[in-house]
Image 1 (tube, rainbow, N blue to C red):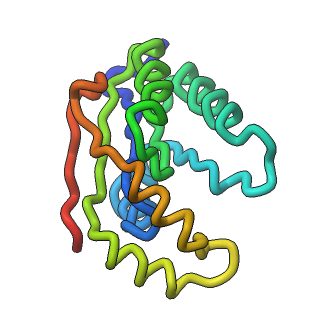
Image 2: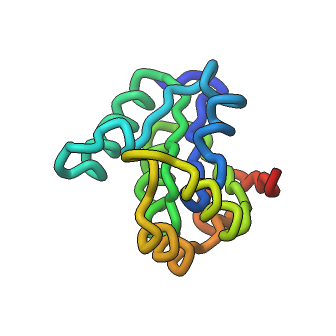
Length: 144
């Protein structure tokens, strides 16, 4: 049975916007953190993420999904999973300018660095989250 106050938080923002840092500073102590980055070599990472989120919600955990989640289509299955579990669902959008994200990405090393085409492709597809998608609320975190 889902716990009272249980929620799913869907992070949204470009690579390098500060999502993982924000999660670490604000939710890591209260929410299970799920990210496709946790399984860099896994096939079907999207399906695995959906399964893990559903299992954690069924156990009564609050969960945060720390990925770019750039479009309503990317976020819809997560909203649906929260609703199915009877949990609240909110989006946290890190509204960081592309130039800042690109500079942060350039400073990364190894697998943490996203190819520029990936960053700019995400920026082209990105649609800010809204309550019209089914979120209870959308928190906007300005660049900092």
